[in-house]
View (cartoon, rainbow, N blue to C red):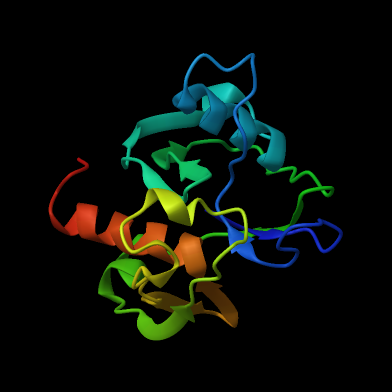
Length: 168
């Protein structure tokens, strides 16, 4: 299940993502965070969520770690998405997803040497041969919706795990 983020959000409005968010003090685990955020964003009861397992840890940046979980929502009740966070909710059929090979597009990242970086503590100092980085971003297109970035990378990893029977 995927969400289109509300247009009024400060970060990534209109982007497609999974339910989720930051852990809070009330959460006893990352699993509890995932369930709580899903309840808050989709407006469903806790009993409707069956967590199958964790996909591992996704390190997006040095300051952003994600802990994706796989689960099933079983409910006859309609979803009541939180309009402050969610513009739209949609699903992608698993058989369709399993057959897809995402498009790949490259992004280049260059090193911006910050003035406060402690060059004096590393070999070669300011002459250190930092490398620029090129990453391959997967893109999925489904019914006019573009799924890319971290969400697409998580989807791609999910397909890999399913193909290798990591989930029953």
